[in-house]
Image (tube, rainbow, N blue to C red):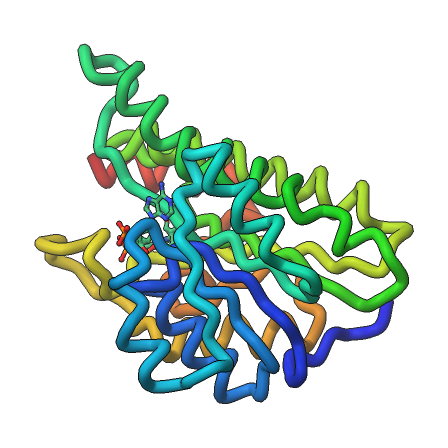
Length: 246
Ligand SMILES: NC(=O)c1ccc[n+]([C@@H]2O[C@H](COP(=O)([O-])OP(=O)(O)OC[C@H]3O[C@@H](n4cnc5c(N)ncnc54)[C@H](OP(=O)(O)O)[C@@H]3O)[C@@H](O)[C@H]2O)c1
C-alpha cells in the first residue's frame, strides 16, 4: 500500500484540547494539514488552538461516550482523510476489588466504545479510493496487564485487538490502520507519578513520522520501544515485569 502524506489532509482528532491530542494537532499543522476537526467535550477549551491557527482548526464539541455528540460531529464532516482516536481516560482500579466493575466500565466507555463508535460514525470516508488512515492511541499497557492499572490495561488490550481487526478489515481498501503504544507521557493523566515521562511534542512528532513511513505498530518514546522489543521477543517476561510494578 502507498504511504500517506499528511500535508493537505483533513483530520479529526478526539481529545484535542490538552495533553497528547493537543500536541498532535500542533504537529499536524507543522506537517501542513489542510484542516483539523479538533474534538473536545468543552468547546471553549479549544479557543487557544483556534486563536493560534485560525481557520485550519475547526473546534467541535465531542464527547466520545455520547452517541448524540458523535453523530452530530460525523454529520458536520464532509471530507475526512485521517481519524486520530486519542481521547482517553485512566480510571484507576484493580481487578480484584470492589471498584473493579465501575472502573472497568469507565475505562471501556472512553477507551473502547468511544473510538469504536466514532470510527463507525465516519467509516464511509474510509471506503472510497482515497488513501486514508485511522490512528488509534493505545498504550504499552495494551500488550500485557499492569496489575496496578488492571482495568485500564483491559481497555487498552481491547482497543489493541480492535486495531488489529480494523486493519484486517481495511486490508483490501486504501485505508491504513495504525496502533500507537506510548509509555508514560508528561500529561495530566500521569500527574503525581514519580517516573520518567516523555514529552508530548516529541511523541507527537514521532507518531506522525511513523504514520508517514507506514509503520503500523508505533512505539513513540524510549520506554515504549523497550516494551515493544520485549513483547515481541517474550510476552511472558513482559507480563512478569509489569506484575512487579504493583
Ligand atoms: N499519559 C500517558 O502516560 C499515556 C500513556 C499511554 C497512552 N496514553 C493515551 O494517550 C491518550 C491521550 O492521553 P493524555 O495523556 O493526553 O491524557 P490527558 O492529558 O488526560 O487528556 C485526555 C484527553 O481525552 C479527553 N477525554 C476524556 N474523556 C473524554 C470523553 N468522554 N470524550 C472526549 N474526550 C475525552 C480529555 O478531554 P477533557 O479535557 O474534556 O477531559 C483530554 O482531551 C489517551 O488515549 C491515553 O490513554 C497516555
